[in-house]
Image 1 (tube, rainbow, N blue to C red):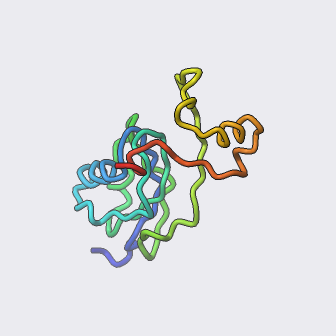
Image 2 (tube, rainbow, N blue to C red):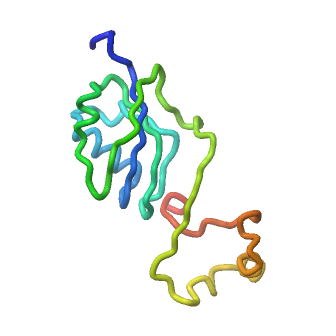
Length: 139
């Protein structure tokens, strides 16, 4: 390893239709590294378009930038770093939720009356809302 190169790169991984583990395995395959060389702060949902920071240990920038962008995965915003990302480094999450192809009464049997009233009153942003979707929450 050339000591003039940074030990780590941090980058943003945009993914769609992949679990975090599937995306990391894909990256590892394309860069010919073990998946254990990649680290991230937490898992993201498969059934969503998500972005998350990822770190990789001792990979040449050219190899990282040669990762093939696709409809399911893209690498961007690459910066050199001196340490990996670790579980727990995450300062918080930011969500933009878009509902597509919903039925009129989709939430009728899922939400409590209080949650329905909260949505109708427009106070959803200041009230807790249970995430009832995604394998990240329920396997």
